[in-house]
Image 1 (cartoon, rainbow, N blue to C red):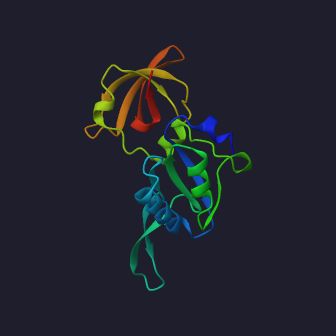
Image 2 (image 1 turned 90 degrees about the vertical axis):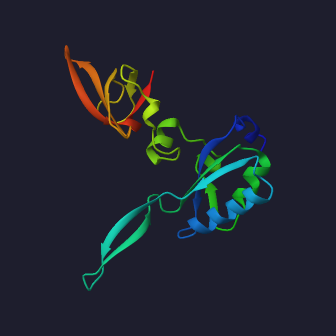
Length: 178
């Protein structure tokens, strides 16, 4: 696994594929590793969930947590041969996501889409900031921020298209500063 030394460029998010239904068991095993001996290499582990309201056969509503990415666990770690080996051989882990089970770090766009780094804060953007749209049908367009919602979760970007300036309301995670 000498190729893993080339991946050792600091902490990055990786995806671990698990056996079906073993996501939480794998997450707990990784948390134990963090607490014991790899806290300097393995920094965070998550199984993203969403809250869903369902109705049972009797018409009674139930609130449940549903995994957004079944059979996957996200881990932020510094990739080294020992850390890779330890996590790769945990019970319930089938492989790291990547070609030939070789771990490939997530891109910034993938991290934002999975909401692994948390919500964008209001002070992350200021009115007048030049931004690029990084997802959606306007991906690649650039513009300036003209408005920011109170909680910082939405921004209005003025883009120039077809010779006209248009205000577009977007989720703050859909844009990045340039």
